[in-house]
Image (cartoon, rainbow, N blue to C red; front, side, top):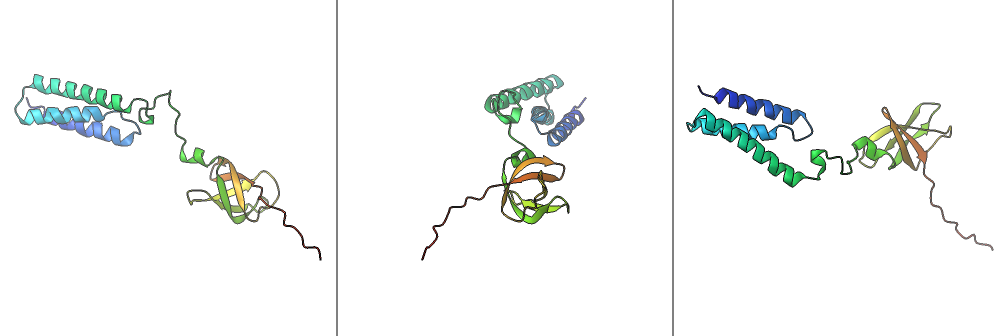
Length: 159
């Protein structure tokens, strides 16, 4: 009995699972099935194909784990996780594009990556222009606070 269909099915299913997930989960099985499929085409016995599938899958898993150990890719708990794009916005500086007025439900800001967001403040003051600090992401809006402008006193001329 030929195992061509089985090896192709394992490759396709493993590749689909790998594409739809964010972690390295099934790539090892796709590689093992590819080696077993090649052995099948070369006329190897079923036992040899299965041994090659298992060996290749385990070896690629072990090598990948060795080289990626401690990296965020494997999702290890002992490494500091990278912030998501939304988490990275918190604490960042944004520039006011449209005055922020809570009463009129208006106001937009542009954040560091050039994306424009609707914004509001905790206070009732209208923020006309300048820079704001992002305090939180709430739905499709940013909660912001006005950053203090650095102003230096200019000496006055007395004549």
